[in-house]
Image (cartoon, rainbow, N blue to C red; front, side, top):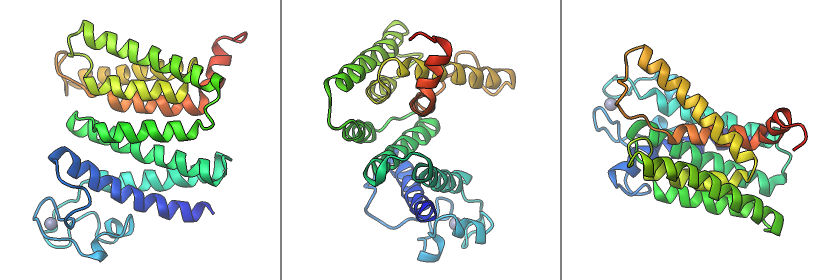
Length: 248
Ligand SMILES: [Zn+2]
């Protein structure tokens, strides 16, 4: 079964690449054929087979022989591995697995698009929120309470930083991401996710500073770290909370 989802994941990864390329330019994601971003040549079916096209062409465009963005391949590979892992490990049943795969898809688009352009697609965040709500069905009072508290804490913290730094340390998009993150993870798992986002983002930012690739005042996308923290927090958050506070 996981082999089928590996192939599905690669196809969804390919679609995610198209969205990351097109959404920031305001282009319709469904309309128009894919073109090489270097030479503008319209790509044929043989150029668009996820994973395989990139490998058989040696990472270069068939027409102009310039390098294809490695991100395309990495996205397809990561989504393929992610879908396979969800089907293999999650044990949620086919409906739950499909929803979690949808969450992986939409959060990867948010992750890569924010990392590359510092833009957050409102649509992708809305779809993420809807998928989380479906995952939480039936919305029991305790789930709503947990998720609502998580949402308030995460959006409150990131929104607070946004307000205090007047939008310099965080963007409005980060508040949207944090809100869905809180709704998804719920309290107290969201605390683990937020903590990880700051630690991982901090380590990455420090590494860039040391290498001289960023200055102290230059901006860094924080959305990708919120997404990474969300996933780790969702998968291992409960164990991490128990480890840190045994009596919780
Ligand atoms: Zn080309």
